[in-house]
Length: 284
Image (cartoon, rainbow, N blue to C red; front, side, top):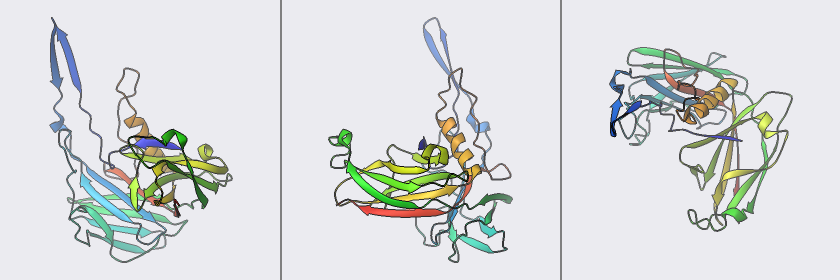
């Protein structure tokens, strides 16, 4: 399983500093990042489960800005499928103060495996589109857990030394791609800050026999694993992001570039359509 780091889908901006050493003195020259044009950033998800859909619209931030990226709260957002069905998305219908910029379906619906979905976002007078197809996802056969002796005395996470093992069968007659989320007691967690996990079926193999979760659990915890299907375009997006974030800026590293996306009109981010399979286990 491949893992990468992301900053909540926030567009990555790079600071170029040139250090000049003259007669023992050090001078730092900072490139003016204000010249970089602000971009619309769109993150969307549609699944085959009711309630597992959202679209987030924001603007890219200046390199020196901290905190949340500027949110767009007055966009017009719709999702349609290739059968002619259209669903409108409303901005923050629950008035959650932490959900500015998030749009949810105005009417409940579930995506259908095999259908192609089109996202349309109108923001700041411009129109953006993205298309993605929902592929089937391999079912999780079972979950078990065991004690990881290497983590038994981990001072950074005392009491959490159980790892969850995943079992499934992956059909090898098709080319498939997956993304995984791991929860502890309804909280989405990562092993390290800003991690996300994805894989293709070559890395997973046909027999998934005890793939270890990256999250550790204590007695009484409920572990939940969510497996999502990815299109080829989705897999490419996360692969690009991995290369981008692993770029050390060395002389042999390629120049940094935005991830390939399915969004039009210069928008950053990605619109993902996924089937999802979910299984839970309680650590007794």
